[in-house]
Length: 309
Image: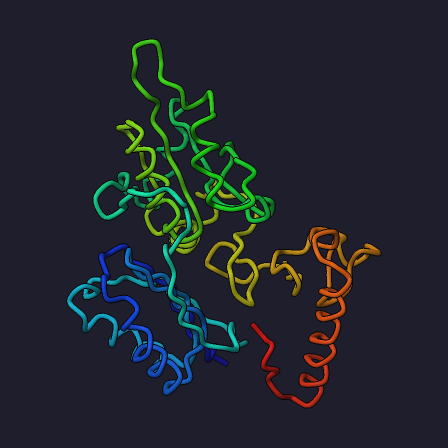
């Protein structure tokens, strides 16, 4: 049986001064076509992952590409037997990926794209500093060998981390090192490489299409990737060929469960895990318990609970 749900992930940095007015018709179309997921709109562009029946998802993509500003919008596809999302949201944001550094323009300043087929040779060069720009819980379940893990809680912490790293200091000649950056789908690297270029780095590279395109196109025997890649939907993680991985998700913090987490006294399904238990109050945990109870009732009745994300 073929998988019935098509997931499309896409983003584009492009000036959208009228981004607020784009929300109502886009949301209406997604609801009409029963497409679910999340679309972020900002003056700097669009960022999204949506899922549904193939014809419906492609109808949304066709609608977006009918706009000359988005005509060359590229997307990545994957298939699943289970609906990756249960609600549709279109959100207006200040940034489609939050860095909180004014004046950074990936449209004009992003680094050099490196295709997945050429990535191995680049990061094998001992003179290249390889940086994983994802959050710590994402790096925890998989990354490229020898890549630096900045231990980020949020992407907005990356600029300060970059500024403080001795590996990125200029040599005695004044020349800054070569830097290669990667992330899940490529969007964070558009901004992180633009930031480095704004700081005077000339040789800055990033993986075109991100980890997902690498895992989709590079054969396991030739791969320098170890582990799984965290994704922000019900698959939780994927491996080579974008096959769903073994990881489960904490419904409270939306992060992958660590090995042995479900055996911990701090784990409670839908309420907390060892990673997030200390960060929520008793009132928040009680609210989560009620949501979990309602979700379990809806599942028993084979209904979709409105609280599903």
